[in-house]
Image (cartoon, rainbow, N blue to C red):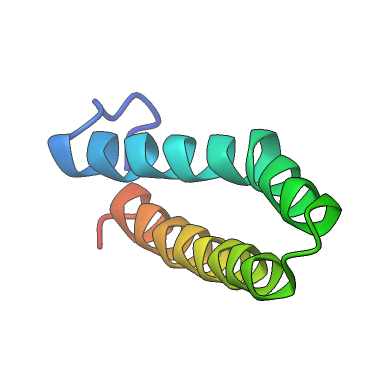
Length: 73
């Protein structure tokens, strides 16, 4: 397969969502968790941690999908 493969709509979609989820994970979620901890809201802390875990799983699914797109899947 040619290394200069154009970016397809499906590849763009995957990259766009990965970017948004990554930004949320690495720029936002820890602050929200810290805020909930400071407010002594244990249930909300657990909610943010669950969301973080789910987003990490989503990113891994998208990474696998992107690899398939790149390799002609």
